[in-house]
Image (cartoon, rainbow, N blue to C red; front, side, top):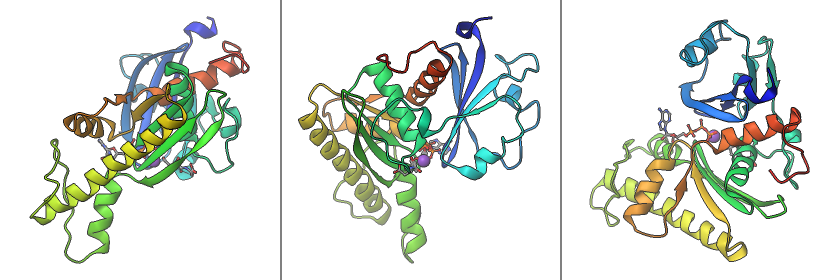
Length: 259
Ligand SMILES: Nc1ncnc2c1ncn2[C@@H]1O[C@H](COP(=O)(O)OP(=O)(O)OP(=O)(O)O)[C@@H](O)[C@H]1O
Ligand SMILES: CC(C)(CO)[C@@H](O)C(=O)NCCC(=O)O
Ligand SMILES: [K+]
């Protein structure tokens, strides 16, 4: 078997949940999300995640990137494990505490859509990450994600309830508490996305802007209702990033080559 047709699994450990990708060589065959683990995984665990693809009990390579150290440690005894760290990422000017999920997402987005590239990751945290045409990190920003914003109002006030989000845009000028919370959070997030996107396009007019993360679809739907320029949603860029790192280490992709 060559590297091109070997099966392996990529795992991105996020702050809310686990993001799994099943690969054959560089091709992503399937992806899904699961909750965090509460204990070290059993031998059959990976088969349960991908029952149709992993039919016989195999210890296929598991390539892990994590922003949650305690979750990563649960895999310490898996015998075919590879951990991706910032050193593996073929991007320039990364700073030491930069999130590996941000690095992989922008690497994957750049690989698929070209550099320069701006990634907006609407996960537990909402992040903006911009990389220029020389694959240098320009920088970015971090704010609380939608769920975290909603939960923090409930937790830090006496009167505010936790509200759920509707599929449609809320009334901007609300006359009711729940709708007021929805309005405040959604319209300021959309305004922030608009501001960062505009500033980025002033610097790099040809750049793609890719939206990803657990709330990516919801934000895209809100955005489309406002009928501004469409935003491209891609849930797989993080796996494109993992595959790029794996490809470099197995010699399929040259580190100096355009990815
Ligand atoms: N089944 C689900 N479980 C948890 N969060 C979900 C689910 N479906 C959608 N979401 C949304 O996804 C968001 C979390 O995004 P995501 O799963 O990308 O976060 P994460 O695990 O921290 O990953 P990342 O590190 O990429 O941000 C939450 O704000 C939530 O609204
Ligand atoms: C910002 C998050 C939480 C987004 O998942 C993650 O990328 C992270 O923990 N980053 C470390 C800090 C930074 O990226 O500057
Ligand atoms: K996160």
